[in-house]
Length: 113
Image (cartoon, one colour):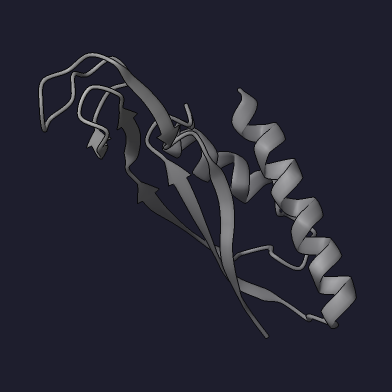
């Protein structure tokens, strides 16, 4: 379950920000998660609750924001949204697509006290 290690990284970022900005508690963590990131959301929710125990984010609400998959079509030269990496271009039907986003996961913001 790589979601546990993802949450460990999230905890490190949160603790560093808490130290830097004298944050007493984190009430909400908002993550942006790309469609192609491979993150299993139920596993991430479970891991988040476990990993945040004993930290300033213990009991924080985890909010996950879905980001679409996007690709550049080299047939029509448009950036398009796709549901799967191997989908054809929804604009022209071409098959020469290069994914440009959708594999990321990042902390969007923290609600703190």
